[in-house]
Image (cartoon, rainbow, N blue to C red):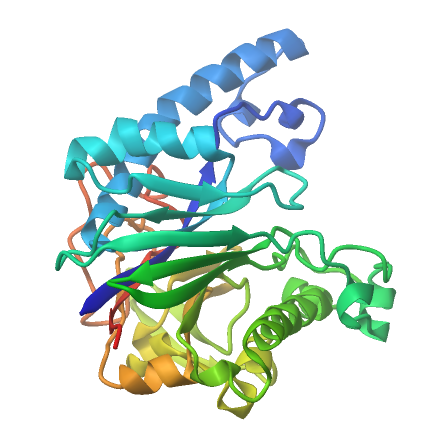
Length: 370
């Protein structure tokens, strides 16, 4: 009895317009900066037209990436709300795969932009085993103080003990797959942001992600018991906004690219894998072939890295020791340099930078639910 489990940051699946770029240039789309706009009313009119014209191509590509993964359960990040998800599933996914993800779950998290985590679930697996909903629980309300996770590093960032740990949520979903219990935790950790306080964005925001990872582990241990949690049937899926390694890119398209793996000294991922609590199954792939995102701030700063994770409990990972995760990269824009041998045929209408399925790639793994 198998289950295909996937995660995907769909990049701003919104059902509302963002007009904040009129007053904050950092939020303004680059195409509008080419034009002289006389007032906010005109800006709003142009932003609506820009967003609508861009969105249709982007969402067709997002749907193609989801369809290519062929997952029974999809954990999603950057979903505006359940209405946006329903409209996307009906208007795009349904046209490609028919009746697929009938059940959809999300809660309102803590993100200032209103982007939440969500889960789409089929009625049954591809092999015909029923997928039954049991319960759902949000953990967005938990604070650092609730879990005794407040640290000096958080204080230096201006955080307070009473503030909430999760920047979005840790959405806990209990299911039964062919009668077998399975728990999914869907997360979207704190983004790295820009450099600050003399540190790069990743290091500056690291204390928050360490706390989020520790909170997820605490939630699981409290649920199943410290001594037994690692052997239960659960998975943590989502965008962790952190990596243990990256592939640094040098060179150019004319003279050839070089791809050099670099191991990081520390990562919030280590909080979850410590003590063989769970396994990052993407690390079963070759070192240069684990990336799910291309990051660049220009030719001087380019790397590929894994931000998107399926973490299996120790017990589930051992029962699926040969399961090899897949990464769907056909929705990546043409500007993304692929290491040798990894090139794929892009989905139709993919652009140099956009449209694209997302800046992230879906990750999927097929599991035996014994």
